[in-house]
Image 1 (cartoon, rainbow, N blue to C red):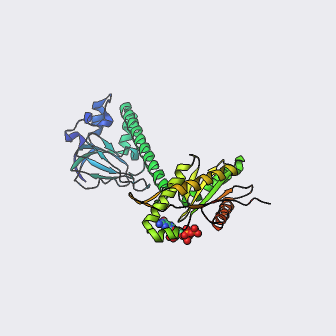
Image 2: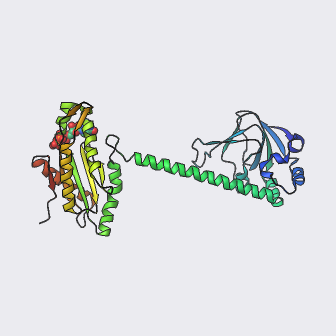
Image 3: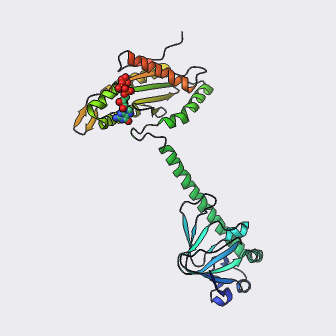
Length: 327
Ligand SMILES: Nc1nc2c(ncn2[C@@H]2O[C@H](COP(=O)(O)OP(=O)(O)OP(=O)(O)O)[C@@H](O)[C@H]2O)c(=O)[nH]1
């Protein structure tokens, strides 16, 4: 940055500077600014702002202001500051060194106003105070909008990490996150909670006979059967390889058993296409149903459904087994 002139000698007018628009006593303010430095900064060069808080007003050229790098808000957002616009007003107001990284996009001439003088001018000029408030309000709105965008993006990626890529069902991470709350809610409200564990039958054989890609397609088909057969409040999860799970909040054991029978039947009827012309053999599934018992936690609920599933396999597969009732 090179000192090339003062504002008074630069030929620029107060009316060019947005922050001073509408000033009641423009000549007096122009006189106060007359001795302020005009600095030249070459394209690509940083605007040195050091520890001293200063207000920079672009007289010609353009600056790029990158988002704050120290507070972790840096996300590649760059705003452009054009002639008449200012940068650094916030550092002047909160007396913090400027955290943004400012560089010249082209050769630029900048009016530099030291913090002390900015404060004196705020005391003297209502127009400057008003313009500053407007500018800050605009900046706060822009920052809020950016935060909201970032939150939405964060939520999007969070949800994405909870979805199984192959089937589109919720994954184990989602289950670990949500099931403890579902169990606590059911205990707290005294409402039932049912869980159905589903395992495709002889799936190893299916894979071995038709290939892993056909196996993947069968898993997708099974997931569609589950998603298509449930109420909006029910959730389907891919629990592991060919093991899936359905959570049925507020559902009695009798209703859950009926749902499991329906899923078993639809699974039997589902058609798996290896490609569009070639239907593969039907798949079947074994299902184990459990209902949340008093004092039971999520692990015990899963174990009960797993035990029922095991009995369904033992009894010949392609069927539903209910949890054993306490004697
Ligand atoms: N294609 C495909 N196969 C998978 C995937 N995840 C697990 N598997 C397969 O699922 C099969 C599960 O086999 P097993 O646990 O022996 O059970 P099974 O052959 O279904 O026999 P039963 O459960 O006793 O009826 C294994 O061959 C796994 O490789 C997957 O994402 N895609």
